Length: 330
Length: 189
Image 1: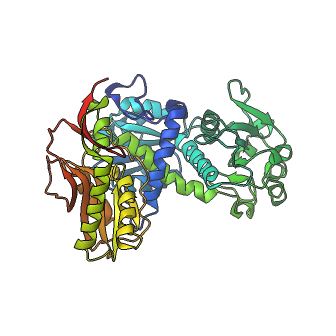
Image 2: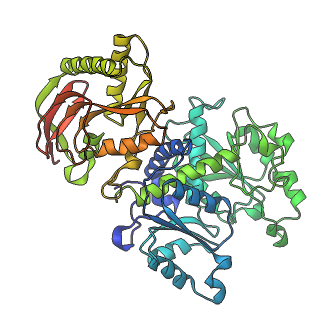
């Protein structure tokens, strides 16, 4: 059995799930990252498909909108020769009043091996895991967790460290992210990406600084292995990675921010701010980007921006996760 | 690869204890030299010949064979490595994880591929390798070189070049390393 994805405690049948970064632990994250190299090679081939998961079925249950995560899981499953089924809440019997539980059990009865679940409420993937015999992968639950995003972010950083960035050599660890200074900027409070990334980055030894206006930071950060700043200009020259979060327009309506322009002026990565980054720095974003709000349009296309590489790595990381859950003989 | 993986399957987890050495390091080197000459003879030179070692045991052997071939024929031979974990027919039945990244950086279309592995046993690894190879192009021919053929085939596969034919029991293990070839058993810890 792989160390990475042990069955979650309290679940019968010994099926493995991927529900949170904490389930994996450092050893598990490193196993996924190492395995991802093999699947990255598959994606680079003329025929990017292997028969590893032939006969397995992966169902995507997206109760919330998504472009990249849903397509990324679908591409990953297809490159492993698994069959895919997609459930979109907007066109489903949920509109006729079917409950979440009945929906899950209906899909379970059709015979699926994995369910990829996204839901606007925290904790739903855990609940789904109780109702199905399939392996459950959390593809984002509320403000809580988005573990595959954290894995692909870690893989992207490891890849950059391995390829060699100016000023990183000799400072960043061999297997983890030791010595790396990462600023996560923006709406931390409402971000599952931030929660999963903080957990994964710090587990691998990186120093994480959260940057944002006080209204968008969680009211209590006790237990978070991070430092906090409200001044992006002060933090920028001291970090290797600037991780920008998407600013959702509804935060304005909730009176958490005076205006988008005000946010951009203080926390947006504008061209002049980008010029102050140290030489080997990377700019990351989980997408979808609001160009002109948290990131200036031209900054997103600079060579130091690895946004498209994150998307590309996302497919390989999700192949590794699917293979560990369904194919490694557990 | 096959032998290494077999050691990782649950009922065999334990320590390999050698019972007898069947080939010394010099024997292995002599066998490689003979196989190199056989490859040159059979293919009338090395035109279009590439070596592909199977992860993990076949890879160092493929590189050694590549060096011998270069000495024998005077031309360098491309050497790649192939991990067949994603092509195996026992996925889901036992722990099978890719051990190392596949590295086939040349197009195989029109080439003669010599697959290299340490031990030929059931033939299932080679079956998986043949499927994997076809994803990298249509080779003109595929040949198989192994250091040890221990019998017990489960598929209609035969080697073209053999270092040593070694009759074994099914439950024995064959270990190929730089120090030579040993036969032994898995002893539970």
